[in-house]
Length: 400
Image (cartoon, rainbow, N blue to C red):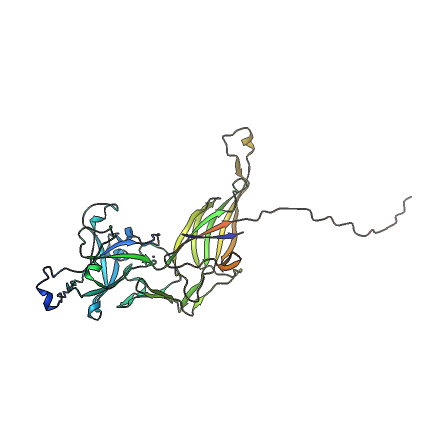
């Protein structure tokens, strides 16, 4: 996990198995259906597809889709004959158990296809989740997603994160159903294709802290956090696209990618992170929503963005009663709180070993935490000088 600091003042049809005449009589179990199994999601974040998430069984089918995964499958040895075209695979429970007992889970899909037991038969399979993500399309060369927003808030029952499986490309049946090194699958899945998924986007979350322990003098209560973030939108439609096979992948931004400038009084902060109340202390603490962000690619080498924090300040003073009664609070409120203080900051570049480099340049599968460090400027006073008297003026007065 990467961290950055800001200082501020995601009807079945049958196909009979095909084989060479020479091997027909040697094959004794012909009709073995092709099945799939979601086994692992690598580098788990709450970004937020996890192995446990793909085992989630919703009460309604409308929400179940967010836990399902899709499969594109081809018989590679037959000029990539199409077997599955965005097949929806759904988890089901086959008994009672818990997350520590994965054998109670199974995955089902409607389209039935059979393995060709010919030793020369090979297959290509691609998988992704959640089902129906970002205008998904597939072909024998891989999967594509389009209209992906640069930043989107992670929500329940919503497509934000996307995971893509390590592909099977021109692999034999034995290779496709091998569970070598994979222990997390149902014991009945002897001929199932186990997929291992990986996040193709990145995660962004936030923490907040005070630069020092100010508890004796002030309490800072964060009220809102908002971002001014880059976009890639044309006619209200996001333009980022992804294509690949799960191993070799390409993410593309359009010419509409709009960077952000240094914040001014007219800057629009369009992305809300937090809108509640949370006291900030000298210990960094998680705050607000988490987001899925598209990784850097091509000419987009960083995402520079602005942050605005609104907070209240309750000033504190020594409790006079504490001198004689140690059971009372040592510090108490000093008047009413100061409301609606605003501080802004920018994540852009940083200096590392005398080199200026991007401060926030997420890659696929990265999880970043931005720590907002509230560092107020104390109001102090000093004597600069005392100006001398003006030039003397003379006057006469006559007294008698």
